[in-house]
Length: 293
Image (cartoon, rainbow, N blue to C red):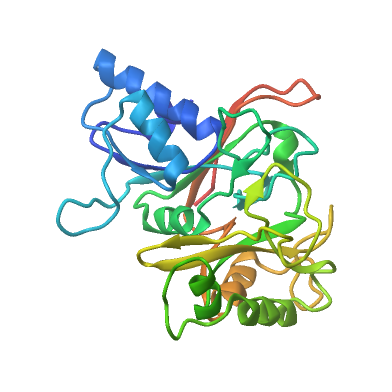
């Protein structure tokens, strides 16, 4: 349904992690083989979708406007929760392993329950660059809510001390704890559970706000990032300065204004639409929802 409604021949498609975007890659491969679509290329927003695209046989290109890079026309992401009113959504949440595979969790062949954390900075960059906007894939109508709630994922740069511990080098980088403290201050009284650093792998319950014995760290040649969650509490609405109806844009701008933040799992800008893949217990059917202009 996402392929039919939102993807055209010649498109560069940014694809995030998750089982539903992986299924879109398989559909793209079939359409390319049958001639239903032509000249499709994929920007993989993470290692997991890159592997899925390679297995599916869909041509890949790096993101960027220079050299052999390309700018995405549309981004396809898997949503954890969607506001049914304006179609803003949250993606790349932590899967605690208590309810099976989390909506945004990439599949694993090990069967061990340990899943790599999503590469949120790459996901956010791909969505921001998409010319025609972002399409959210919601596993079912149960993901639709009147107000987004719970944990809000944030990617921040790692500081020098943490990078050295992980074999990297980024002299002058702000320590992640400073960003976490500023986020905590910004949402004091709103995020009742505070700001937690994620463990290195998804698929397990969190036990410590600093990430436990193996905190998440992604170190690359460009530097390093870690994932934090601004935790509003289960079923507690995202709020700002005590306002539970604050604009999502204001929430996002507050987070982006914190030095060291390089990505956020709140997507409220340029949402082209939502594909609800399966109905819920109410017997509803799969459907496409488009943001009114």
